Each structure stands twice: as structure tokens, then as C-alpha cells.
Length: 220
Image (tube, rainbow, N blue to C red; front, side, top):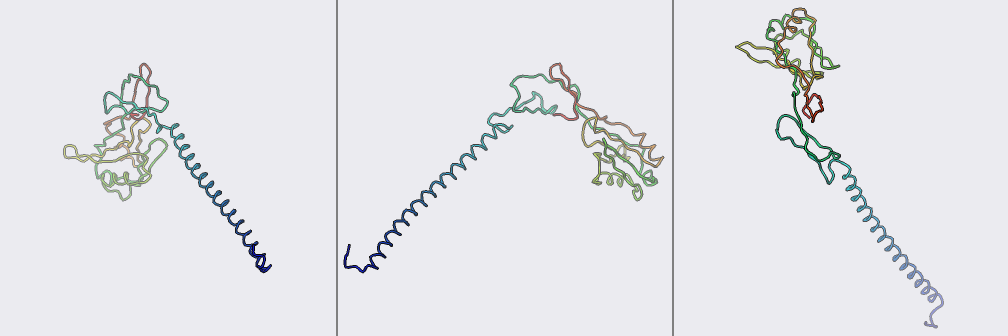
């Protein structure tokens, strides 16, 4: 220590040295805290990924996936859940599901043009009313049914049989519950609708697994 140093300079040097040592300790502590924070963030990310992997084990997309296949394609679609047991099962398809289709061969463009009031289509608890004013042909009626956003599940189409155009109404979905109804306030048109020819009746699929039977509207 330089005893000849001015007391004020000596005091300043001591203070500077003290501040430097404190700043060095603070910088070291700050770096240690930052390193710990980085380590915690890395651990958090690792745990999050591990938790995500564990959650997938409890779903159908987990490590072990079950599947079911039929020895004949096109008759039934089989699915197996994560809880399914391995085995060989005998399925018997007694009847496939079908959509309802009715042809109205007796109706002509003139019948539609002359009709007044409304035509009503229904599937389950949903209905659609078609105003017949301004509809002048079978094609107009087909378009009015198919383009209406409130259509309950009925598809209208036209087919030509022996040179004559016929109206065909079909259920959009298979199964007995999707059978449709159709009626008209116009007596003459309603009579023609009641005289429709059934091409396909709505029915549920009947499938047997061993000796047990099951019915459903689809093929799954």
C-alpha cells in the first residue's frame, strides 16, 4: 500500500475494489441462476413430451393397435377398439342394409304443372315443404327437392324407361329409420304419389356373431 497516497484516493480505491468484488459475486450468482433456469426449462420440455407420449397409450392411436378384417370384402366393415380381444369370430350377414327407392311412373310434367298447394317430404322427425306454384315439370320438382337446404334426406332423380321420363325418390341413407314419406295437398298429385312403385324397401342390416343377432342401419 502506498502510504504517500492521498487519503481520498486511498478511500476511493478501497471502495472501487469492494464494488468490483460485489459485482463479480453478483455476476456469478446471476449466471448460476440462469443456468438453473435453462436446466428447468429443458426438464419441463422433456416432461411435457413424456406426458404426451403417455396420453397416447390410452387411445386407439397408442403403441398397440387392434384391427379386424373380414374374409370377404364389400359386405361389412369391421372395427376393433383398443380393448378388443384377439380371436377368430364367425360373422353371418343375413341381410344387408338398404335405402328406400320409389318410382312414380304415373306422374307427368303436366301433372306437376297443374298441381297447386305444396308437396311434403319427411324423414324421421324432419320435414320439407315444397311450394308447387311455379314448378312446371318433373325436372323442376327434382331440382327444388335436391337444392333445398332443409332437405331431410331424400334424393330426387329422373330416369328414362322405354322413352318415358319417370321421377325416382330415394333415401339418402340406408336403414329402416331413414324411410321417407311423401304427400301433397293437391288431391290429384297425392293420388299419383300414393301409386308409386317400390324399387327398394328401406331395411336394416341383420348380422349374426356366432348365435347372436344384431340389426343396424349401416354396414359397420
